[in-house]
Image (cartoon, rainbow, N blue to C red):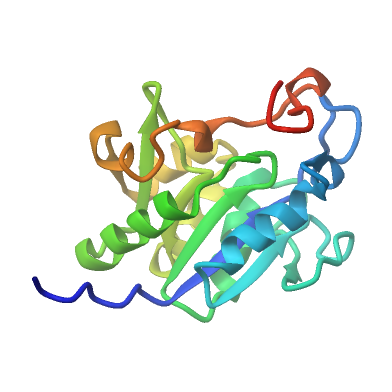
Length: 202
């Protein structure tokens, strides 16, 4: 059996620049299983990435061990601006993006997406879960930055729409499900009642 090729060089990017208005507080600092969400995401990405960045809005508010902060590419540009900032700061060709409010982000799924991005030379590789594209748990190529920048200048704030403009390779459930049989990676937290209780229950 041939040896598995080494994983592609990869930068991790935690998107944590949102105002968290529906949550009523900073999502990045919410505690899940004894850890702030931002540290949980940094630790997850640190296991598969060469370095980890945090797009923290202003580039200053979230000092976390094991990660460097970057300021959003434009103020109030939403997650699209955070992704662009991460792509511009990355020292590797590929960036694994995770939204800070996805407590069950899955390293095996991200590694799978990175392999697909590297072998297929795709600009964005994103899973489809429950019929919905998941561009905030995806791998983005640095060479997509100029297209993303143009999209942002044209007022595009939807990450899903931006991914489609850039050119996204869709990964169906049958491909990613072996890496995460639960499919929980796609869950995100928007309201206080969404926060998992100790032990993982909601």
